[in-house]
Image (cartoon, rainbow, N blue to C red; front, side, top):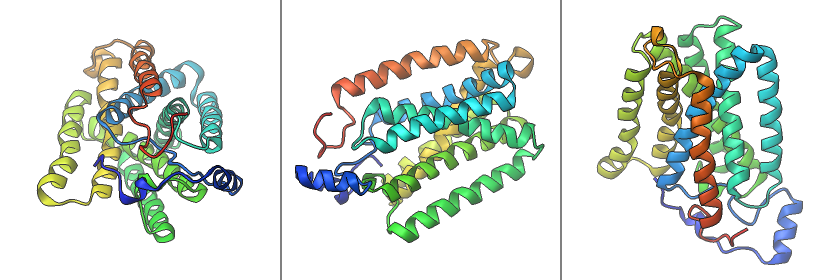
Length: 275
């Protein structure tokens, strides 16, 4: 799942070519990190943090003000990401954090404010994700994250990421609440399911791109289920630590790991010079 495709070995363009690519809205280098073990660790941490941060802000500010704040943060983070000419850890992971927060808010608003059951929203977000992936493949003939060098592919990538977060939130709440598995049992369920892509890729020959997006979708309910279990009251079969403290506790390792990646360049695409 973490091996770069042949597209990822393209040599950097010369300086003049870089300027022309930037003017066209494209990049000479990949705009996303290499998929390593640290990628998955940070991804799961951000999903959990996004879940509890969304719940904390929603209860503190109210759903509408919290949603407006989350949308503003998302727009700022994505503008910075789109304006970057290459993968930069702080820029990229800030955008992922804000997608996590706002994606959770979007899924929760659909259920709490509009009153749509999680069963319906899960199906709707699944259809939305499938539509984005189909449109991406139809237009670009690839879904590989190693090909994110053009503005068009970057738009498809972030639309897919946002859809996966909304879908993952709905699925996690569906299993924990509607199906009454609870947050801890749901976390173990998704931990088991997320191992399937790796095993299928190794023993059954599952396409690496398909395995990646399968695992990517499941990181959302995996991280959110364990974070909810830590944050919700004991009356809801949680540990009762509170969504605010859990959010802060998750921010610390996220910042530490992203700082390490920024300094070590462990997840910088191999063809990209250090920023």
